[in-house]
Amino acid sequence: MDLHSILITTHLIGVALGVGGATFGGILYLKAMKDGKVDPMEGEWLSIIFMILRIGLAIAVVTGFGFFLEYRFTGQEERLMDPRLWAKLTVILVLVSNAILIQMRKIPMWLGESLSLTSWYGALVFGIIRGADYSYLTFLLFYAIAVVIVIGILSVVKKLYLGKK
Image (tube, rainbow, N blue to C red):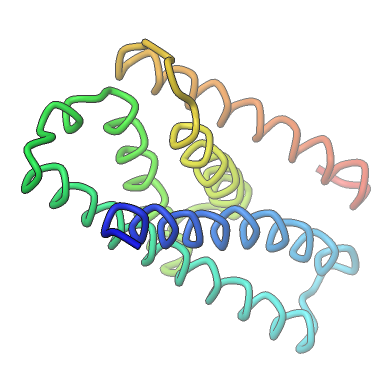
């Protein structure tokens, strides 16, 4: 297997861990909050999921940097100008910042959850779409709209499931 195949495979593993972790983390957190508190067993499961999210994020960041190096040293610098790549990097930067802010308890959980879920799925979508000839700002506009939609959806789901705002 060549370096590019290794990078792609490893990067996809990181994104899969992130998307899966964000999805199941949101579901389990919602279930844990049904009675208004996170009991010790729920806390253990959430800790495991948050560790998986961190591992996925670390893998995505390291392999993403690996792509930069590969493109630079194999004469593919034009790939570094792809607006889709820069949109994905911005989303990854949001993920890193969001993880730090959640850990420090400096961001409301409703916003942190929404950013995490949207960002992981956004990174996945930006990574797999081909032939989308949009500008960097258009990609970010799609992402911002998706964040607002996810905030709304999660708000409705919580209201219906938890019976409160």
